[in-house]
Every structure is written in C-alpha cells, then in structure tokens.
Image (cartoon, rainbow over the protein chains, first blue to last red):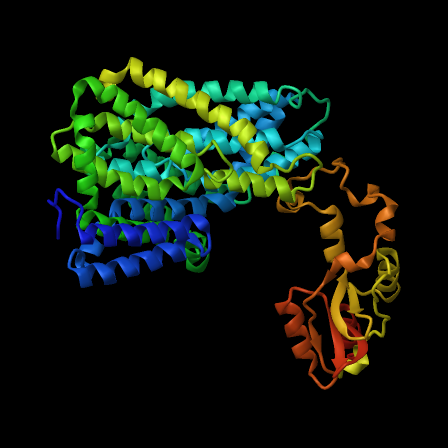
Length: 437
Length: 150
C-alpha cells in the first residue's frame, strides 16, 4: 500500500483509471449502474491485488456495513408497510381537506411526502404518492405536473434533514460518527427554511396552474386501508425504529442495528410471506453501494485520496478560510449532484474529508456542508435524483395533456429551486457557523 | 372433451381494419380477443378488448387505485364518454405481439394451464398455420355442464 505517498504513484493512477472507467460506465448508463459498479469492483480487486495496493480482505473491509444493512432493514419495513394502503389513505384525506384548493393540496402533499421522506426512502415515498396524486389531479381536472415536481423536490429536501432520509446522509453519518439526533439538530434548522422557501417558490412558479376548483374528490379513503391490523403492526415497528433512532447513540447502538430491531418486531408481528418480503427489497441498489465502496476502497488504499487531501489541506487548515471552504464544499457538491448521481460522489469525497482530519483540519463543518450540498443539488435537473425520474415517468404515462415533464421543463423549476435552496442554506450555514463547527 | 368441440370459429383482423370492426367481431362471438394476420395471412399478433380499453381509456393511476374510486367518478378518460372516434382508429396500433396458442390435439387441461399462465380468458386454436378459432374458459365450462347434464 502507498497511503503515505506524497507524490502521484503508478498505483494511484491505476486506481484512478479503474474508478474513472467505472464511473463513466455508471454515468453513461451504457450498462445498468449496478452492473457497472460490480464490474468496477471486480476489476479494482483483481488489478489492485496484482499491483499490490489492494486485496480481497481490504475490499471486504471497505464496505460500509452500517449503510448497507440500514438500507436493507428499512426496505424490508417499507415492504411490509406499503401494501397496507396507509399512504394512500393519508393522500386522499389530505386531498379532501384541501377542498379543491390546488395550492393547499400542493402544500399538504408536499408536507406529508417530506415528513415521510425524513424516515423512509424518498424514492419509495414518491413511487407510492405519485400515482394517487395523478388520480386526485385527474378527478379535480387540474394538471398533475406541479404536484409531481413538488413531491419529488420536497421529498429530496425532506430526506436531507435526517441521517436516514437519504443514502448519502447514512454514509456521511456512518463515516463521521454522527448520530441521528445530532444530524437532525444540525440539518433541521438549515432544511426547515429551505423547505419553506422552496414551497413558496414552487407555488409562485405554478401560480397560474394552481387554482381552486369546485369538484368533489370522489375517492373513498376508508377503502384505501387494505389491512388495518397489518398497518397498525407495521406502524408500531416503524415507531420503535424512529424512537430508537433518537437514542441509539445513548445505547451505543448503530442505526443499522436499531433498524433491524424494528424489523424483527415487524417480522414477528407480521409474519410476512418470505418471497414477497425479499422480493420487495431493492437488491440492485444495495449491490450498487457495495460495488462503489469496494471501488473507492481501492482508490483510497492506493493513496490517491490521501494525496488529494494533501493538495487541499492548506486551504482547509486555515481557520480564516474554513467558512469559505465549507460553502465551497456545499456548492460544488450541489452542482455536481445536479448532473451526476450524488451517491458515487459522496462515497468518493468521504475518504478525502476523513483524510483531512488526520492532517489536523477541523472537518466537522465540511460534513454538514457536504450533506446539504448533495441533498439539495439533486433538485437541479431531472437526473439529479431518482425521485425526480419517478415523478417524470408518472407524468409521462398518465396521458394527461400538458402533464409530461420534459428535462428542460424540470430545469426551469429545478434550477431556481436548487439555487434558492442553496442560498437559504448558505445564509443559515454562515449565520450559525459556530454551531456547525 | 376435445378442443375442437369447444372452439369458437371467428374471423381475423387484418391490417387497415378499425377498432370498431375488431370489437364487433369479438362481441358477436363473445370472445375477449381475435388473431391479427399480416398481409401474407400469417398470424403475427392479436387484438384484445382488455388491452384496447387499458391502452385507450384506463390510465394506470386509476387502475392502481381502482378500489378507492367512488360511484360518481367521471373524467375525460371514462369509457362511457370516450369519443366514438376511437372506433374509427386503425387497429394496427392496438395489436399485441405475443400470441398464446394451442393445437387441436392438445388436452383441455393444457389449454386451461396456458390461459392461467398468460392471465388470459382465451387462447387461439392453431394447427400449423391454420386458424380454427378461439378457446375460452366460458365455452369449456359450458360444454362441461352439457356433458355432465348438470
């Protein structure tokens, strides 16, 4: 291994080449991103072993078990919660509460999607809410486009507030040793005004389409609940998980273990059919993460990330420049996350930030800047976050004239939303910088 | 019971025909679908009433949440208010390529199994390239009742 090398070595260039090749495959979508990550990981281990900077053991050690297991457990809990119809029930009740006022409907749906996304995967949340949103819009005879865009964007923003709301946050929390409470205490005050500002901006942008209509929503929310007992059991398990998330650090438990405790409760109470339960887990995403961890592990072991840290250390070490560097991290992370998948980016940046710590830099503000940046950047373009793609797919297949969201149409709303979000977050970050340190 | 005993002879759909003509053929024989033949007479697909309704007037969001729909629901995609122009549309865009078929020498249970596997209420009876007609569950049940004088 060449972890302490201060100059670029052949091993570093080899590792960089493999990672670059894998990322080109991932971002170009020539192959499915999971296939690309698996291929990249296998090549990294093989070549790294041959070159002497990586090994199978090191590859296994580089996998962040907390992240992968936490996601696995939460996917299983959602798999039991989803068929109960609880989410559809909430959507219909909120739609009726809006009394045909499209603006209220948008606020209600965005709020509930954001709250759910704080604790559950935001992609799943949008997958569940998008079809029922289109149906509600269809009945009200209004364009579903503003609602779908708002749900995707605000689920991304909501997810940025918590440790478990977005995979990059899990990775950041795991690497930095940040617990759930600490995470929400820091990110919550930054994300709350961002959320409010984004809702107001979206309401303003779509002001001509968001009208009040005099139509009844002829949907029966009581029929949404397919199994009320199952819903109660799943909600109980989820409640246990959420409560434990807030105190896991006091108990010395990993977030992943906490999620598995809740999962065990759900498994005992629910006794799901194994084929259905395991079929609902998104193994592709988990395999993608494992592949990325192994690829970046190889790059780290080659010493390249340490070398990059050395190039950045002078800028980051200066206490006078710390705020500026933090803001730069936030904006660069956001802009990159708007055009490429924020997960590979986060996985790559984390070891660099960790490396700076070993050089005597106070990296705590960088973690928050990184979390804010990758969380908010995804709203900029249609490809910035998976939830955006779900909303677009739903808008295209609904067949309602004028509902289809185009890439340009997304950016017309997404870029102003992203920029305003970043500006609000930057103000909060600057004003309370001592808190973020 | 032989499949030739329960087959319902029908016409086929050809390129250029419209949805109205295809619907009439299905309705007059009480079947859910009929074969689509290309200009050379080969069966290359099928016209399905279910698929046509789904494609033309049943959005997925409505199907996914069908259990929530109230009785007074109405919107522009509801079948009863779909413009009659739908019937004049060329059938070619509504053809499904996968065709479930069975030969006359096959047992009835095989026909039922294939219908189950394809989640379909009908299957085409073909021998080599000769088309005999449509086998439906309804027709099999009807013959079963007659056979056992139930």
